[in-house]
Each structure stands twice: as C-alpha cells, then as structure tokens.
Amino acid sequence: MTTLSERISQSAFDGSRLRVVLLLDLHDGAQQRFLEAYEHMRNQVASVPGHISDQLCQSIENPSQWLITSEWESAPPFLDWVNSEEHVETVRPLHNCVRDTRSLRFSVLRETGRLHTAAAPVSGGLQPFPRVGDGVVRHALTFTVKPGSEPLVAEILAGYTSPEAKVDEHTRLRRTTLFMHGNRVVRAVEVQGDLLAALRHVARQPEVRAVEEAINPYLEQDRDLNDPDSARVFFTRAALPAVHHLATAGEGHPDVKRHALLYPAKPGCGMALARLLAQQDEAAADDPSACVDSSTVFQRDDIVVRLVDVRGSIDSDPLLALGAHGPRKAAMLARLLDDDAVGRGSRASEEDMALFLKKADMRLITDRRAP
Image 1 (spheres, one colour):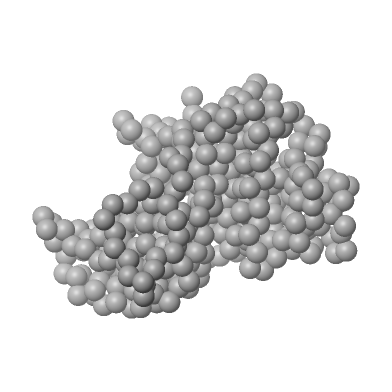
Image 2 (cartoon, one colour):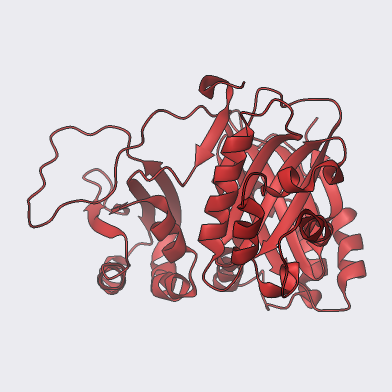
C-alpha cells in the first residue's frame, strides 16, 4: 500500500479555508481610478457564495504597490467565481490601472489569535495536514478552433520549435503536452518554479509568438495579440486550472503513456465531476495493481480534463482509467456527464464506460519534455 507520505498530492477539495493574495503594481496617477474600480469589485464579490472577507492594503514603502487579500470558505466557490464570465467583466476596469499583477492561493493550515463573534461565525476548516509536493506547478489552457480547421491547426501546433527551457535560476519549463478532441485544443504545461514567470518567458519567444499568430485566423474566439486587453481576456477565458494532482511512489515506470481524457459535464456539474474524479484517484492510489501512475484534474465551468500517466494500455481497465472503479461509481460518473457523452439511456455498464473511454481519450498532438 502506498502511504500518505509517499504520495505527491495537491487538491482544492480538502474543505479548508482559502486565502487569496493579489499583488498589484499600479501605473502612476491611476490610484483614484483603481480605488473606484475596487469599490465596484468588492461590492460584487461580497455577494458571491463562499466569500468571507477581503482587505485592500497599500505598501508603506512604495505607494504604487498594493495588496488585495480575500478569504473564502474553501477553494471550490472561489474557483467558480474566478473562472466565471462575471469575474472577467468585473475585473476588466482594473486592467488599465495595473502595470503588473500576481495572484497566489493558499489553504489555511494553522492560525493564531483569531477572534470570531457568535453573530459572524467563519465557515470552513483548516487544512488537515501539510501536503507533499514535487516543486512542479501544473496548468492548462483550452480553446476551440473553427470546425474544418482541425487538421491544419494540429499541424501548426505539432510543428513549433520548443522555447528555451531555462527561464531563470529558479524556474524552468519541464513539459508541454498538446491534445485535441474535435475542435477543442488543450495545452498542459509543467513548470518547475514560478508559473507566471514561465508563462511570460514563453509568450516572449518568437517561435511561440509565430505559432500563436498562425492559429489566430482559426480561433472561434477572436483575439488580437497586439492588444493587451484582448490577449488578457482570451487567456483568462482559456485558463483551465489544476484542481487536483496525485502521483504515487510508482511514478516513473518505463512503460508509461500520457493521455488526456475529456469529461463534458452536465450544466452546473463541472465542479462536482472534478471532485468525484479527485476522490476516485485518491482511493485508487491505495491499490498497488492500479495502472494510473499520476493524475491531474483540470476544471473550468463544465469542462473537465483529466491528464493521466498510464502503465500499459489505457483500455486494459476502462473503469480504473476513467476514475469510475468501485460500486456504483460508474453510475455516479454517468449522472454528472452530459447526456451525449455516454449516450442517452446508458446503464453505465462496463461496456458503456469502455465506449465512453474511447470517446473521451483526446488525440495527442505533441509532447515536449525539457532535456
């Protein structure tokens, strides 16, 4: 059995309170406009379910540096909010005020001296134990291209020159994997160190810029990479955050192949589906015969993608590969999936799940590892 200490585990689903820290560097002369935009934003976010409080702070050393902190009952309600179209529109007035920004998210593990009144109890618990990480940040982007352009887009995406892996002395690109499913593209990245620094490094590389410009005419969502606001909104909408990652001590087996599985959720069920997959992966980690070495669940709205490293053939155990092993788990998964994903009237049998696995398995376009 794999012990807790042998697992690499990162999750948004442990029920602990969340502290979000937003660091901002304002343009000169933008303070009043920023304060007006913040007042509007905080009034909006105060009504979001799961939000507890927020603070606005200004540096005592550099007046252009500001800090917004917010506390949430847990990570899922924050992720629902930050990935919503409402959030995109709410924060848009801030863009012209801010020179640079950085967002950090932390589960609350310990606290000292906090006072709560009976009239205003704080929901959400503390993170139960420190997580064991591997120093790698995982992130993904997803977008759709115009129907009929898929073969050309796949050729463009497969043919790019990899950028320099080293970003700085602390940060390097480890792996970039691209998949397609119909006209949907998913690009998953692994970064050792600072994700934001790595993304900015990649965006500045001419070979990457050339690929982005080449696929621009085929995107369903218009964007202008020369317009900072247009590019920012596009990549905000395309962000597919990792909500759970688990790797067992067996990771690194020589016969491992990477797959991306697309789970189209019923409207409003994306987070519940991601949570179910995370729970299933945690349970499967105790099975030494399990074929999945590592799994990362990405979720935004009703788009759920599970990146899995599988030993041998993914078809050898469809239920385990899908995260639907165990009594009634396949039926639970089927209830959260869009009707067209498993077929209307599906009994969620092993045969049904095997057919869904073939539909869900995305086509690998390219898999680049840093030397």
